[in-house]
Image 1 (cartoon, rainbow, N blue to C red):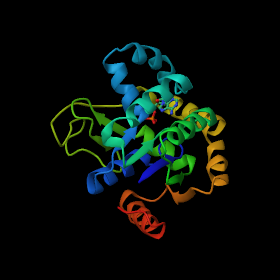
Image 2: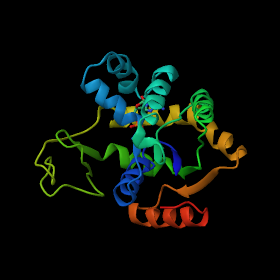
Image 3: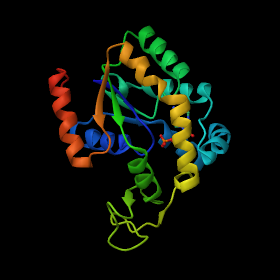
Image 4: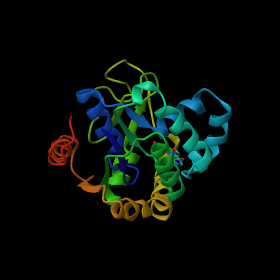
Length: 219
Ligand code: AMP
């Protein structure tokens, strides 16, 4: 099945996509992760994207659409994928639709993670990531056993530069200005379903699996 996860930063899209990917083998494609890797590798795309990402602004459509369509052309994305963080603008959504149409494919469902600002801000500003293995922790919701150290590999935990309070607030403003309109866009196409991003990870996972069954999607 081909899914799009839509919702503000901090809605838990990446976390749920990870769980679905581990339990059911559905490919998780996060444009944020692809861009962060490009920044780390100092590729031309990464160098261009970095200035936008640090400010919490959107990276230009043509860059993000190119990396996403390249990724979904690979054979491992033929039958199943979750797009997490893409599309974020109407132009990206139009280009994705056209690309899939040309390849005789389509999005089965768009899941909108409806989330309060309070929960999103609390999740993002408390998030800590392992420098070595990428594992994600939270100062309150999922603290590491030893402060500042990854439980899984012993690596150093750090705060993403765009997870500081000021940048998080800007990311939410950008979401409302540029991404929220996709809710109506996909509602009109009849493929939008809403779940609560305020639920905790396990509760939301159960809700999602129920929804997939109800929609007749195989997981
Ligand atoms: P995320 O990890 O999804 O929160 O993305 C982190 C940052 O990557 C965003 O704040 C944007 O700067 C950039 N980014 C990720 N996906 C997109 C997208 N679809 N369009 C534009 N910028 C994006």
